[in-house]
Amino acid sequence: MMAARKLEIFYRYLTLRTNGLSERQLMLILAFVVGLIVGVATLVFELLLHGIKYGLTSWFEVDSYSLFYLIYPVIGIILATLFVRYVVRDKINEGVTRVLYAISRNRSRIKTHNCYSSMVASATTIGFGGSVGPEAPIVMTGSAIGSNVGQFMRLNYRNTTLLLCCGAAAAVAAIFKAPIAGVAFVLEILMLDITSASVIPILIAAVTGTSIMFFTTGFEPKFDVAVPGMFLLKNIPLYIILGVLCGLISAYFIKMNDWVGGKFAKIKTMGGKWAVGGLIIGTLIFLFPPLFAEGYDTLENIFTGSITSVFDNSPFYAYRDEAWILIVYLIAILFFKVIAMSSTNAAGGVGGSFAPSLFVGAMGGASVALICRTYFGLDVPIISFTLVGMAGVMTGVMKAPLTAIFLIAELTGGYRLFVPLMLVSSISYVISYYYDKQSVYTRKLSADGDLITHNKDQAVLLFLDMNQLIETDFIPIFENATLEDIVKELPRSHRNIFPVVDFEQKLRGYVTLDDIREDMFNTGKYEDSISDYLQIPPAIIRRDEPMDSILEKFERTGTWNLPVADEHRRYLGFVSKSKIFSAYREQLREISYGD
Image (cartoon, rainbow, N blue to C red):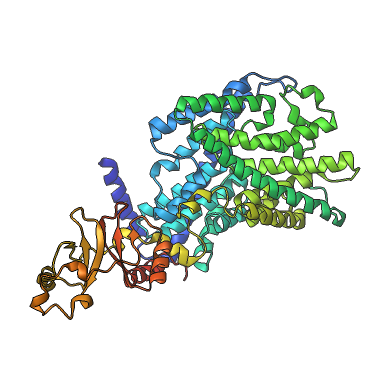
């Protein structure tokens, strides 16, 4: 109670201090505040993650394998699971998907614990070797910070969503030192309409978050990469081939992720998931140490020209100078990374697919370059193909070409690769879209009808609350009633429709005032059964039915009112087309980001 009282006093103080500001001025200030907090949170997260990982692995000898790889990951998963189950007591995995769900179905409200819980669980998972990425958890953290600032300031849905997106943009921008990628992420992944009213706050938040990381960790890009000159026109056919392969790898990434998740879902006990997940992940990391954690250390070594470092701490270290074994090893890492990532998440770990998609793309690009150099004698730049492959697979997995292109450019300072980045990303997007139109983040939401989109009509429909649309002031009539029974109800009825139900309240049909108009003053017909006037509804609406399906029923039947029933056909009320249109117009005004 004391804490709530202090927060209320603080809120009133802020209200007085900002009373003279316009809504736009207030949002600019809050965007800066959100970016500042998210930048600090990202810094703390990275320090925690790298501190755990360094403490566990810094003493390993590169020329020998370590049995600790077999047990580290499962320890991290167990610790993360226990933290989530007994401390957080809420689901926090699938960070980006949960952010999308909050925007689409929960009016952009995210629980307060998400401001820190994803960081702790993810740092534990990844620090101990869980083969997932830290980006989705930090996006969840940033979004939660933005959402909670909006809730604290008691903003409406539109502005709370804007601050949520500011937090997400700041998180991506800060963790990668890539402000443009942060803005592109909000546009493509969170699907916020960018207008003059929203773009400036998002830019402010992204730049602020990035600046925090610049001032604390240096101005160097995430990866210190020396991109070898301009791309050569003669390599365009090879980049096209790489684009096709990235598209196919992206399809494999999404399908395998679903398949592994489905298999783990059949394991009913948490202990069973730990055992199976620990066995799979531990074995894979023992054989392929680059699968340990998010894999950025391996990418850093490749970018510095030490591609054979993928054999460090591996049982295959002695074969590091054999070109064909190196190629096979990279391809194996590519395919097994997806299995390790999916198993980590499915077994109870907390992490995302952002970094794994970059890692898999890097292995694909490096493999193509090595094959061209080893077997065809082509002078292909390994670093360039590695970078472009990262963008290609990320595009296909996330269905976000702009985010991938700008991220790789900012991540490495490799702006000279814009043409091949655009080419490969475009090809990969088309091929992956052919196999699956949804991204790894939106598949489940789309299947459940819970995904907000840039189609504003569809987006508005998601926010219409069926419970508020159902009208219940109709007077039900039992199926054994007579005409006289309806006539007696007319004085207290404000409707011209009478639903007809049985004694279990199951809907049998309805009678309209027009149906009985000719006989309602003819007392000789008062004993006639109501079934003589009964109409069977052309369609029945279910309470949990998607709104687009409801509108399709209105369009198909040509009616203005349709009855609503539960799964047992019990009568609940009526929905009118005019009520839907009125709610639609009101909701459209609320979520609009226009000036």
